[in-house]
Length: 289
Image 1 (cartoon, rainbow, N blue to C red):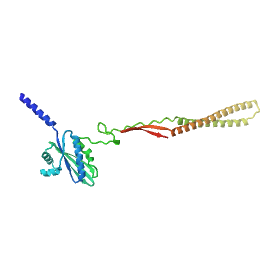
Image 2 (image 1 turned 45 degrees about the vertical axis):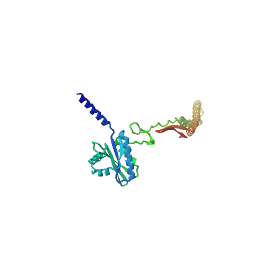
Image 3 (image 1 turned 120 degrees about the vertical axis):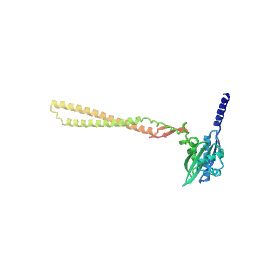
Image 4 (image 1 turned 90 degrees about the vertical axis):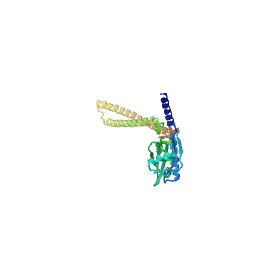
């Protein structure tokens, strides 16, 4: 019983050690007919991505391409069995290789991965023949468990979830209420109303004066009617004068307030806070209208 228990403990310990052992990964040079400088740059980009997701695993770079190694092994590089044969021959747990094929100024890059006891996986991306090799990194990252590289506007730092955060929008600056302008316009409108009322009363007083001039003065009733007409005409003249004088005063005040508002707007200074992901400051606007 004790021997069986010790045997179980030994098996579990060896299994845990095997699971914790680092994985050996080999990145092979890139095959294909693309320019050799570009293929070298693509291979370096693949190596960077693999290492970024390898953790404590061991990453080494092969000296021969997959096609060259397959020819030495004696298998067809297009078959999954050949990938397993090459991996076994090189004594690694994971094999990474790829091709870069040029056509019409575009380079089709296929990166493949073969893990022990798992079918091959691959990812395909296309870049221009003049692009740098590292341009493939965002596309091949998921194949090796790394997150795509996120570039945010204005060199902003991506958020914890790996996405660009929306740029903070500040509310527009509140402009001061243009009280003088509103009061000036109101005064001018009132001036117009008063002027119309005053001219109307003056016109009615003028008609009354005509009636007074034409009224006969032969009897007592005639004199009483004359007195009433003169009293009514006098009131209309008085009220008309007051309205006209009020219209002139309101007009002067209105023009003054509007002129003062324009002067204030011409000399106004508006300070607007501005915030970018990398800096903060203020925007000063002079002479806003």
